[in-house]
Amino acid sequence: RQAMEALATEQVAGLVPEEAPDVSLVRYPEDVEDQLVAAVLYGYTAHPLRQVQERVRKLSHEEKMRVIDEYLKRRGKHDQPLRALEHLTYTFDILVDFGAFRDIQRHRMATQTPQELGPVHGYSTPPEIVRYDLLPTYEACMARAQEAYRVIATGFPREAQYVLPLAFRKRVLFTWNLREIFHFVQLRSAKQGHISYRHIAQQVFKEVERVHPLLAKYIRVDLDDYALARL
Image (cartoon, rainbow, N blue to C red; front, side, top):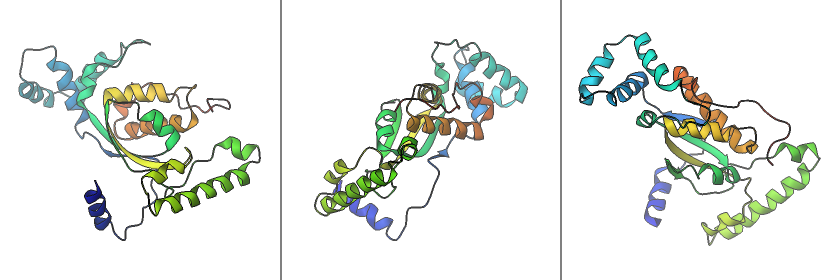
């Protein structure tokens, strides 16, 4: 680990972390319709995948969407997304406060590559802090935590993470299959969720919708904001 940390530091020397959206879709399947239709049809045939794929490539867009719609439209309120969606994977670069990360990381059907927690990305400020005129006190506490981190990190950089409040933000790379995205977005965007991870779930949905709108329409998502949700 120490050798890799030293090598990584050497390779990115001089690079300043750029501003980036909280959620960035960095990799996704290009031929998503063909992949999904082939995976769906494969389970109902006796043919090898290569042969199914060749036939799918000859289908019209309307014929492909007919297969996808038939496969997804009958899911009931309590039904889990169907398994063929697992053949499609998406990778997201996510910037999130540590409190919300502790909930998001519980979605284990994923490959997670987290960066260590530190003050470099700042911290989240709950709207209630501003609403009730607590911002000066809040910022003073965060400044003290950052100073404590810097002091401890000079000798114990890994242990220094523990002094930072849960509002401090970190980056993590998530690779999810589409079935897990269906589940994650529906669960974590729900009204009763915490504002921090609701925001992440909503942005994950919007990123999928941006590149694959015809699939995103089957994802159950709550994009509304609420005055009173989980604190």
